Length: 503
Image (cartoon, rainbow, N blue to C red; front, side):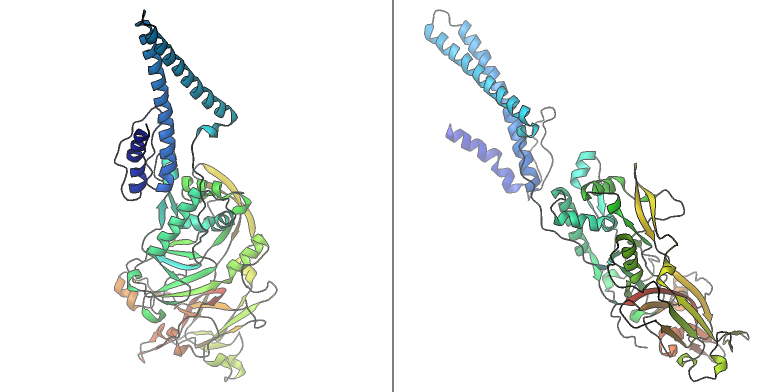
């Protein structure tokens, strides 16, 4: 009997443990109604289901054997009249069969009456160590997502957990994971996504060059309170298009008490939608524009608007930002040195100076006043309705604006940033663009004409002729380029260790 048990254990149980991680399941196990062996290949998922399958099949087998023994004892009893020893043996067989069936049935019913889970064999789900994706900007050559095998099996279709969904739920997931309140299955899917992102994407925490393998990225993801600009040429030159900026934040804590339910709704619901046609759900994931153009360098900066948004949503800022009662003035000048060496007639906002590209005049200087509240509405925190598939919910939302001004100075040789006081949080990112020109129709025109070229500054500059801005306009008579400024984007923030530009 011991040898038989050993052989059964060896040939049915151990091979699964040895080869489950290396080879897919090749044996077709019988199905008994709802009793079927799930097709899990991970050992820690396969083992408890395999044991449960063996337990349930064994229960059915023992019941059949007991019934067969009962029938066999009855046949033996009625066929052995006149043979007392055979009748005694038959009665013992029938009694043993009845006793076996009684013990099996009563133990099963007793355990089930105490608690349904007592009749199920399950291994404890172990939590895996907490992990989260690093803050910064991630460039990826494809949309980042991983399949959730658990929900896919439950709903009988393939469902995925994406990087964008992770960024929506990052705070909720992190809190529950640290407290071991997140389901271990969800932990595994999130950990798989994080591993995939680290393997396939490129991470930036400062400005710099983009390696050749990521010169044509498809997606840009912002993790944390940052913004970015991608440049076509090395040394932060060439076409850059619009900056990648987060347009708002959603407080999912106001909707979900548990990350487990939030995760399930997002994975099964798909894309986050809003019922307001004038509102686009803010996102931290961006499809990269102009995939035919290479991206050689990236400028990364802290976005203080997002720090202020965290203050409005949670009452606690996640970083510095300009104070609400402080106004910063940025002034653009036609000539160098902020007009300090020119007569007073050129130092007034009403003064006029000649333009270089045409016979008209322009303002000698243009002042722009900026306040952190300019980026938010009168009532910045509002409740909006969102939907995930068939699920709808309300969530506190804060929308964040961008600040653009058409300066249109031709020429513009200097600009000055005047903050109320020098302190952390009172720094600004100023993105200069050339005056609007004819939209290029070919890749060659995009690369050679200053359409949506840009130059990025984090401090005042007395002579823009020493910067990339000096390539924005051209004096065809003198065959010389000079600095000029068209639209300008302003935002409170700090450029992160941008390399020194060489021209």
